[in-house]
Length: 150
Length: 97
Image (cartoon, rainbow over all chains, first blue to last red; front, side, top):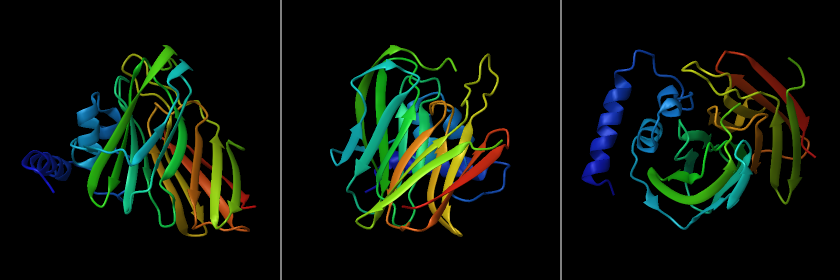
């Protein structure tokens, strides 16, 4: 159910989107504003239309407790939720928190792995959009050597 | 550019696991300048899109991707293509084992 705040944020996000000069592209087009957003809430709002995600233990977020090299941190996200539309990954303390978004295709399992950079010790956040709603889980990863140099 | 996409794809029990390694520096921008990094990766079998991932410069150098799908079967030719923020692109393919 939409609460007043997320409804308002969605409305604002949609209005802002409609004002963009670029013509609307396919749904999966790269979202520059989301990828260049400098805080978690803005990144989520730009990408997903809202930053209110319900904490869920139905999302498995696998990453090391301690990453010796922040340049290469392997992360897996999996969930058994139905109607998964996308999985997005954020590093709260990176200069631009949004790292990647997986858009689900027919037949694809909601079980993906990639490797990302983390500048410093930070929460890693996985957001699953399923059935039009946002769910999230997070895990702190301690970074010994930061990985945003290259 | 050649050989920037390496793929391993294997079906087991109706689900195909696809592992891809893309050769790209994924350079972070410095001093306010934009970096040089892959922004989108798409996987297709024929005309059918079976995978789509959008990324920023926070994905590690030489991006690694692992996903699973029942939409790809043994014997299929899967094509994985990347595009970066400077408009460069490449693709590679592999036969599902």
